[in-house]
Length: 72
Image (cartoon, rainbow, N blue to C red; front, side, top):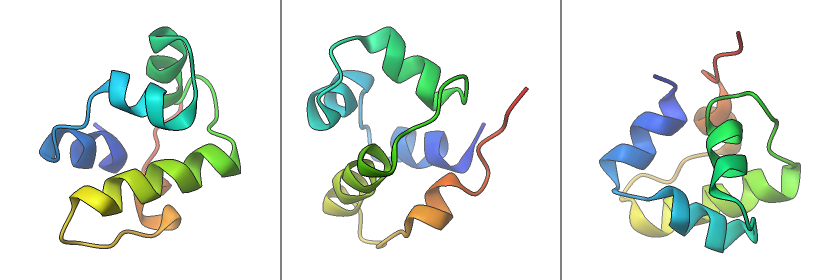
């Protein structure tokens, strides 16, 4: 599991919450992005970082969140 997905699970951030925050209409698109089948745009990555940091005691950088994204 990627670091990003581990952190989302720890913080109980749902795919629906991510979709709403990033303005993505399809949960399947969120799923594909979380599973590194599609890339997050820089704007989406920044918004996701802000969402995570608003719910976490740790303040993560984009690099920390996306450094372990696994691609097939």
